Image 1: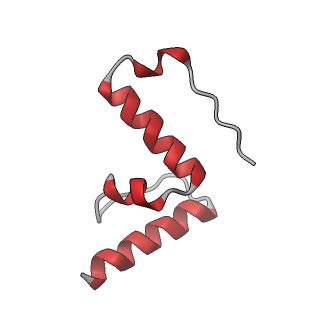
Image 2: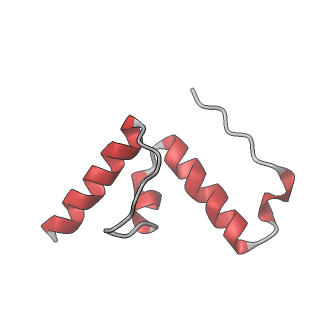
Length: 65
């Protein structure tokens, strides 16, 4: 199980809140939040199996619409 620790100052700006929420979504595998916040041409620099799978699902979904 992944343990997520968030610093107290994480809510100082909307950008920090977005990055916090997005990274938590990635860690939890929340494809809905990830999918709402990436574009078709996203370039991942992390190639963990989960990230690859999410990217492939998003790409397949975009191509099917």
